[in-house]
Each structure stands twice: as structure tokens, then as C-alpha cells.
Image (cartoon, rainbow, N blue to C red; front, side):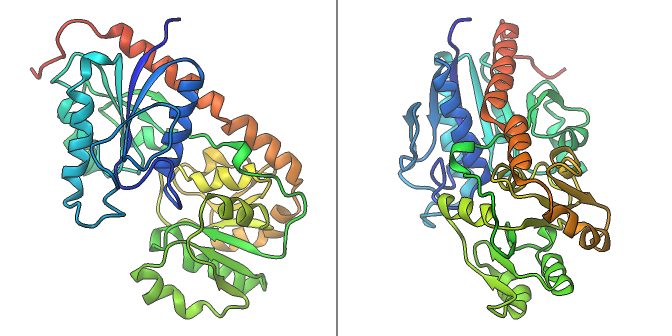
Length: 350
């Protein structure tokens, strides 16, 4: 197979990969470098602060999360996407990793080069109805749960995210704490994680960037002993924090399209105690890498069994399911199919 010419359009909120949290940027970096390692010609459209083995094309020096003068964010994303579209003839496929919404839809009829998009959230029915104005534009779904929400759209493939086992080191013997790692929002279930710690007498470490919700709703529960706030962590500190935990507590209250922290924890050998929302049941194998429960009471009841799981087996299973080769192979198959199908002018609305 001849090498593909791929434009990978990352968000320009921050660098790729991110210095701290940022699942979209983390996955985009892993996919991009994996494609280059396979011999494909990849141009990454991202901030100039990004680090990549691909050819880097930048419209912005820094991301709009780092430089608040770069606003509105939509215009920054449009500039970055347009830079790829303006060079469409140089590529066999343009893949847009949407920070918030699939604005690449608006470009999909302007060029014969296929424009593929991945959205990273669980969209509402109203969002999908709006997106369905472009029913021929291809999407990659990141889970079957997300694919079910994209009814009426062209889902070219469902591909789970991957993690890099080399960056997520295995720790056979955990320390004496549970961990919650994720944004501080009601939907992430941080208050429920604190309830788990309180009711079980376990020590809980909270890791995320401080925000208004933390200050207004979470901080009063942090006592520095049983519930400890450790702040936002970089990639190395995240691996150490996840690897040292007895279990990751994931009592998510709102369905999500994936849940990268689940796969990161399991790759460290740390089992997961989670609630059954969104894609969780696709990612966690009960009795092998953790336990998916239907209620907080059930999660608490099964926590001792989760903590007793074989950590080596947890990691082995997670690496087999979420290693980067699988994700890269699946994307190459989609790119090849779209590039082969592309001929003549792009479809116009009827």
C-alpha cells in the first residue's frame, strides 16, 4: 500500500501533546506519531508549541487556553482548519479532531479531498439534527455509545481511543488511596467519589484543575487527610498517581462518549470502579479490569473485589485492548477507503 498523505487538524486550544490535561490532544498526538511510524506523510495542523514527528503547520504560536487574547476560540479553530483546507490538493484525507463541534462539516463540500471528523463528546439530539444538514460527511465515532447518538449521520467507523503503555508504567503494589481524576463538574461525579471515600473510610486523592465548581461545591469536603486535593497533574505525575491507586473511582453522572482516564488507569494496572453511563461498559471488563455498577451503593459493595483484582492481569488486558497499533490500523483503513472512494466533485445538497 502506498503511503497516504494525511492532514491531521488538531484543536488549537493548547499544544499537542498537552503539558497537562487534554484527552483530545493526547490521543491526537499518539495517532499522528503512529501514522508517521507506519511511513505515512502526515502534516499536523496545531500550535507551534506542539511536539510531533509529523510535519508541523501552525497558524498560532500558542493555544487560546494559554493566551486569552486569542478569542473568540471559534475563529482560532477556523483559521487552523482553513489552513489545511487551503492545501487540500496536497492530501488524500483531512481529519479534523473537534475540540467542541465539528466545524469541518462546513468545508466538506468545498473540496474533493475527503474531510473526516471526530467529535469527542456525547452530542445532544439537537446537535445531531443540526449536523445532519451534511449527511454525507464522514465521522469516526469513538465508541458504540457515541455512534448510537449519531443517528442519521455517516459513521465511517467506530474506533476506540488508545493509550501509550510506555508512558503509563505498571505498579504491582499500590499505595493506600483511591483516586478521582477528571474535570470538576457535576457530570463527572466528584461528589459521589467523595461519598465513596466517606462511606468506606478510604483515602481519596482528587486531581484536576481548580475551577468555580471546585471552589463552590467540592473544596468544603477536602480536609487534607481523607480527601486530598493534589491539583492538576502533568503526564508523568498522572501516570504515577494512577499507578499508585488501589482503584480509580469513576462514578460518572452523565453519559460520556469515551472516558480516556479509564483506559489510562487500567494500563497502569489499576482497576476501575465505575457507574454504567455512556461508553463505560464498553471499556471496563467486569471481574477482569474492574466493575461497572448500576448504582453508587452497588459500586461501594463491589469495591473490595475491585481492589483485589490481579493488577498484572488488569494491565495485560488493557494493553491488548487499547494499545496504539489497533487505533492506527483502524484509522488507516478508514483513510484508505475514503481516499479510494473520492472521485469527482464533492456531493452537493439535493
